[in-house]
Structures are given as C-alpha cells and as structure tokens.
Length: 358
Image (cartoon, rainbow, N blue to C red; front, side, top):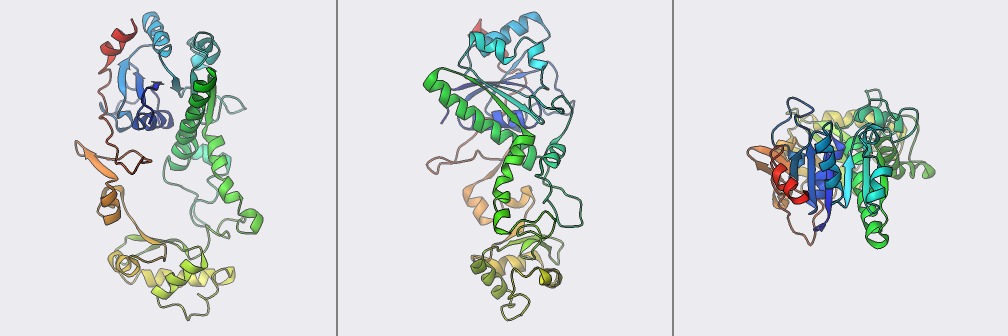
C-alpha cells in the first residue's frame, strides 16, 4: 500500500520504532538509523519491530555521519524521531532547518508529553502518560490498583498509532500540495483522545467518575472470572439481547437478580454468584458451553497459546521466526495475509545505503 514511500527512522524505544514497523508492514521503504551500539545492552541483534526495515549505522556525533544523515533525509518522504524536545534541534536536524531544503518532508515526532508544556522535557513511561491523561482511571476493578496491559493503551494506542495516522495524513497533503508538516504525536494527547469513545457514554448516564460504577468497569457481565483450573474467561455481554443469551446458557434466566441487568444494587451479589459458578469447572467446559453463541464470552489466552484457537489459527495471526513469536501485519487488504520481511542485523545495509546517497 505504501510502495514508493521512504521513511527515515532514528533509533529509539517503544512507540517510534513500532510506528515505523507498521509503515514497513504497509510497504514503505523504512531505513532505521541505528546507533553504533544499542541503547539497551540486552537488545537482540534482530528485533521484531525492525522487521521489513533496512538498517544503517551512523554516529550523529561525528561530522561525516551527520552529513550523511542530512543526505539521507533529503531522499525521504517522512522522518520519525523520538528524542526529548530540543535534541534534534541541537544536532542541526530540527524541522525548521530540514524544511528549508526539503519543504515536503513529513516530520514525525514521537514523545510522551509532547513538544511543549511544563512536562515536555521530563522523563516518563507509558503508565505515567495514561495516568495523567485520564486513560488509566477505569483500568482494573474497583478497589484494585489501576493497571493496563503494558504499552498497549499508551505507547502503542495513544502513541504509535496516532503517529502513523499523522504521518499518513501528512503524506497525503504533501503529495497534493508539496508542503510537509510536523506531526507532534504525544502519548498524553493520544491516550486522552482515545477516551472520547468512553466519554461519549457520560451523556447518557453510562459513565461514572467513581470506579466500579460505570457501564464497562463495574457490572458482573463486563469482567473476567477464574475457572477451576486457574485459567480465566472474559465476559462482556453489554446489550440486552446478548446478556439474555449469556444467562440462558448458565441457566439463570429465571433468577430475579439476573433479570435486573442494569440494577447496580444487585451487581455485587451477581458477581459473587458468577465467581462461584465459574470456579466450579475448568476453562474447557465454559468454552464448549458458550461456543458459537452470542453470549460474548471468550477465553483469556497467553499470546503463546492464542494460535491454538481455531479462529486465530485460520486467520494465521501468530507465526514464528527462529522460534520467536510475532503477529502478522494488520490491517489486511483484499483479505490477503501479508508476509512481513525479516528484521535486519544492525547496520546490515549501511554500505548499500551509503552508496545510494554518495
């Protein structure tokens, strides 16, 4: 889909490299500029999120390598950097300088706090950004510490995916007008923006500022339950027609409490009954009971076992490269399964790339 588009990525951690991987999955020629040595000593020689990219090693503290970096940027449609504000400007690679010679460049900046504001130059991580933005508030059950799957809501959801959207929008404008742009993709912004879907339910009384009392974070029909074998099953039958299937499958359709789906006063009692019920049988029993129904129930799998499910297996979502598990590119186009290109060794394409720009 992005054949003919070149993206230059300056090596970083987390959302920036993930965004570049997604653009590579979509067909862009992504050149990652690796440092002479990895920023984390335990980083693998071939990194999953470098798949499909070409790798060049440049030391931007050296005059010649910095000059080559500028030549490389001149060949690109887009750039991704994830430094703290001011670092690229200090290298002489800030957008004002770069746009003078390359006005059509889409300059993607990936940070946690954004390019301006009191915390712009502060350190932070995924959990901090989504905590401040409000996106963490409804995570986990009431009375337990708020916690989300690491990186998903912040680094990936509020960061990388917003950077990809911004870059794609910038590329469209550059193609039609010749004018580039600066994409300020801040995780604190994106994670707050994602909350709009949930905040829209506030107007109809489905969202409470109190944890555990909202439509999605408190009901007994929107949570996970432990099974007899210590595995977990997820339940989220929000709509009345799906909830009716759920309680019928469990034989609870005549229970007066369970016939009051939205009565918060009976939620604790319903939750306790469901906890006791699900704990009586192993996960396999519940899978078989709810299979091919509209009860909106699904097992909670580890990534390593997810592909054992017929649906995941048929879509061939997970695969291994040298025994390392990774997921295939998404979304799909024309229902075709895309085969990502392998990850390069650090610096594997250095000479090839230099030869093309010198």
